[in-house]
Length: 314
Image (cartoon, rainbow, N blue to C red; front, top):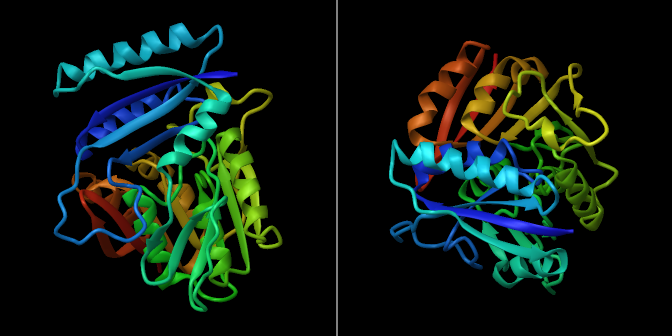
């Protein structure tokens, strides 16, 4: 199948609104990238960060024209509130797309010891490094975006040997794999997008953590942001039982708010939640929604305009 690449370059605050719009119609989810995302070593803190690119891929089938029209209409309405450039649209064959992103994806060091390595690249790790080999495919979560980096940094501090983990919206599986490689006993990785489920499953096998990580086409109750349009045969499984020592959710602020009751229900007493995918101005509302469910935010960590919340139950 050929694909329609649909991308818009915006500032960090506007990215949230554009991502929500694209996510309503996107079968492969939405990626938010910066022009400087692809580098081996972390940038100095004083470096100037450019705008971000919100991007998605639409299957070029009989629905493509209608979906494109709806996206362009949605952007027109957003443009009445704040300046937005015209979207950049191009057609990619499956094989062309598969190679296009590889040209801009290179090794990335995150935190103190985590290293994201492209699956096709040779790398000899140091003894204390946590190496994650990824081939993301059409799934969000390469470790390149600030929200993913913030989660990986938090995982280095919070995961403990023998803990159980729930990863909501796993994308490429990068956070689930990181938790497994840092000692988690079991990880349940959920995604509502079957494309992401397939990519995550492949990456779990590639990193030899299949005995620890289980990838499921699923979500939590309350996720109104989940796009049901791309579920072909059935709706994703809703996870409504079980408790976990650590819950990860790196999606959108609105989704975290709507899922807050389910997130709290899945978290064991004394457990931790890492919530990301939100910008600084959205943090207070997300903190309040978690507090109403008995989750106290212990710390907020930031990169650029992006925030990750570290919360604890009881």
